[in-house]
Image 1: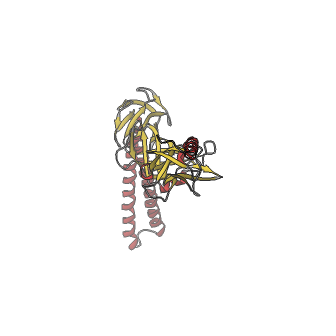
Image 2: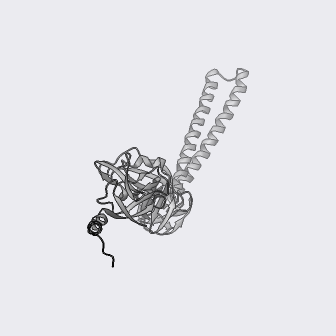
Image 3: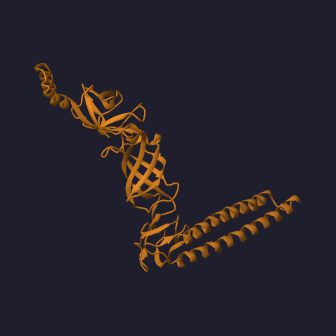
Length: 338
């Protein structure tokens, strides 16, 4: 029977005593390859689909509403007749202007004929110089009167045109304050029209992030699980003093959602970044823990900012410590799970 020497028993006892301490010195962590963790850095702002124009069509004449051809919710096209006023008074005014113009035309022709006759007689000195001058003056006055009557007829025709309200663009009637048979005065609203053929996205972007829109990798409008690509049209240089935002307008290059739909403007500022929650601070410096040959290595990130994703110039296979970083220090021995 072999009996271990006292010296051998002492060494075995010492190793058994150190075993728990060796286990405590190893920190359990989980790691993942860098290439599987990179994310894109996006910013968001509230946004709403808005028409380029919302018109209030008002009466331009004092007249009774005679007919209404468009109701609330009805789509219309540019040029469609929407509402008509009683035009009889304006038709009479146009007829009077036409008669005055015809009279002025006849008077001009008479004055011109008298001038031609006077010029022929004047060549043989049968008409005095004063008489010839008087004939020329009569022609000039008749021409001036004709021009005045032409303007009066144009005004009468324009007033008659104002007896009809037509759609200035493709749109939808959203309100109809005008009432059939009511007397409308100049400036009284009759129809509210929202444009549908030119739609933009209106977004209120935080002032300190607005300039990043110009260099965005992608622009999207997201609403209720759907998304639409965008193109930046205009970015206002004015900052709203109350909300500290700048207004940005975007076009929909493809299909567009319905007017009034609310959602978020999403724009990608950078791609392939390490998530902010994996950045740690040690001795006043931000960095990330990586796993190298069973040890923790603190990799400083001088360009990192608290709470923001950060770019890393490391191979995609680099193992990043994901969990167990709370008390981890550079050089600690790791027990790794993947």
